[in-house]
Length: 387
Image (cartoon, rainbow, N blue to C red; front, side):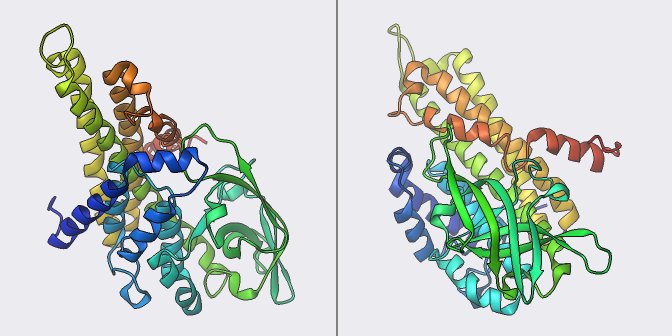
């Protein structure tokens, strides 16, 4: 078992780290509080090839895998710039289109996803069904050669920044009459598609939306893949990359928080004595958080390696475990950092409390810690399904 990155991966890590530090957490917070987007960072990352590291070279990408994209997600987050759209556009949308799209869909969308000039966001969650695609209420029905989509989606990230949204709907199987999932590439300016911004208690430059689809008319080639049979494989193709890159972003955020707190506690002196970091009551919680973050990073590396090797079932288990571990570790790291800094930890200047909402959300989305425990209990421990 090799825990070392390749020389190329090491170079990628160093380069992305430098780019992240060029912008920094102050830039991230400034954009978020102004209601603006991290456009400059996104565009520069695209020009440098970091957004397309997992996209084949024939479409302008780097020809790497989810391992490389996880490096990008982690290092930008470790610099205080966790970009959620890295997950939904390069990780989910690009993977789905590359693996299950038609030749025309790959040619049309992958080059823009690779250089950052195009963003495609992902819409599966619904108000009633959550992420349970077996219960989705968004339905696609035929109208001649066209498709008509009707339904609602919620907590859809970055719709205001994207040209298209990858919508998960249900279609009727003509042979069985049963509903089956299908994915559609929908322009965000399509007639009948409306969005409503959600007010969130999370400091982020990326917004969340409710989507309303009222007989949104789409051409036949909006369906991902050559037929309806591509729907279920295409849906699952995006879930493991989603979990792995979300986990990487969480691990990077945890690293950032621990670095900020450690720098403070190593130099902060009170009562005329040594630095507060010499006190075990301060140092041990930080050390514990650092251990948890590093353990999560190991599972992320394992999950990405399995995924890139095409071992999807094993990657599913490891990806869920990585997402669980990183969500818990990131929340612990940020909370511990705030506590170590005391009152300073709650200020914008020190840049850790600004991440509290995001890391708490990381224990819920894109799949909750409880659902991951259900998955592990059923698929690893052999327990009966509990839900």
